[in-house]
Length: 422
Length: 196
Image (cartoon, rainbow over all chains, first blue to last red):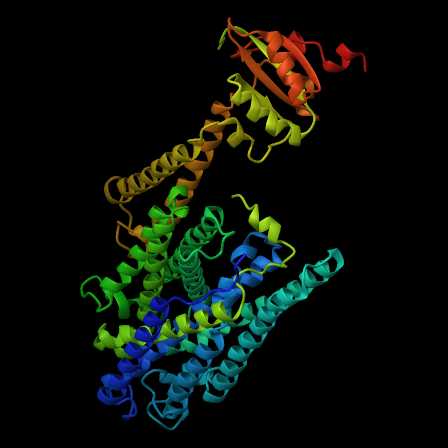
């Protein structure tokens, strides 16, 4: 069995092309958008746009990449055997985390310590000065949580935690390749180690992605507004796009004649994840929307008025807001519902691309209204920065594929995965 | 509903590993398998028997959208035409508030509808009775019933089953359909029959 995978030239070309396009977009941003111009709120929209786009893309792609490690950990804890035939794909995706994590951290630090208040309004020191006319009692009350030092430390610990715990999971998997076939006792011990590290990752993931991370990085853009559903909603968004990203790489490798044990049965299960978590995303999205709509409190409805506007005046993000629902809820619901769709390599690819784009849009409408108001754009710059991140992911994944075997051949559950039947 | 009395050759198997090749061989030999009765669901047996995929989920989808439409049309009629109320200054056509109820009715219709359809397809209902080919089909044996036509040589079928590894073989004349009745009045209990 040939486990070694040589990256095809086309993959390398695309990777390089996307990264070059991304770097060009970044250069364009540095030159044309004056990122280091003074960034007061609403003063210099092109400068704000530069940082808002970087923030949206880095956070979105980082969380999407991190979701694949979460997928591995939960399936490990659930003693899921079916993922063994394809588990090198999520491993490869999560191996990009250190790069994206570092980039995100640099961007966050540049925003927080760069003397700008346009992205995170709460950075303005006047808000906490009782003598100033700008004194903000609400934000003063949140000062213990929303302050640059706390933000920095928590962000650093968060990214470092994902990195180290994920690295441990990957190295456990790679070690098994060298060990040779495991006997019952060794296998049991190895599975136990995996379970322990997977649970540590999951707890850490729950405390970060499912709570503090989205609060700090995204929700604090609208610092007065808060929603207890927000982190769930963000988590669902990135998890479903993480699964879709996995699906794309799995199908790509399958098309290249790799992953010989991955069949329609495995694809069916991946498709089920995409379907189920699209619906879950809608559930969290709707729970957040309906409660705010129903209770109709000004400080809460503000968030949606910024986006869809009011009954008399449409907001600038109305189109994107409903497009978001159609792409991320109606399309997966109606298209992925049928068994034959989930077992079709073509349709799953199509849906995966659609879902990833849809949730990119979702993040777009989380970040832009609070920072750029009605000056947001969706131009080559926005897509170029996205291309940079996609290129980096492809580069990292390709590197992992060439360096490591594509099958965890000594995993004790391998047989279960080979005979897997949905 | 009486389906008529037919002749069956019945074979009892006690091992899944024997049952699967037997099913395959019987089908290959051209005999018609009436059904295979097992004490528990056996993964892949439906596939081996060549039974078509169930349409239960299509029925479920239809019930679900019926529920969705029922909920939405009823609520919009009530709150906009029949009895418009001002609730917290919300518009009469308050779609977000109706979504949870719409969801619930969708689930309710599809769940209840699918359970009833399932019972109908399996002919399960109080007082609906079917012929039991072997009482141990609910305990520890897999029972294969092969339907005979006028031209079938039942001796040959019995030998065939014997060679396929059946533990017990017999020929039964049985009602193929279902009827209304009560077992305790019509049949002897297995325990009494065998004298356990």
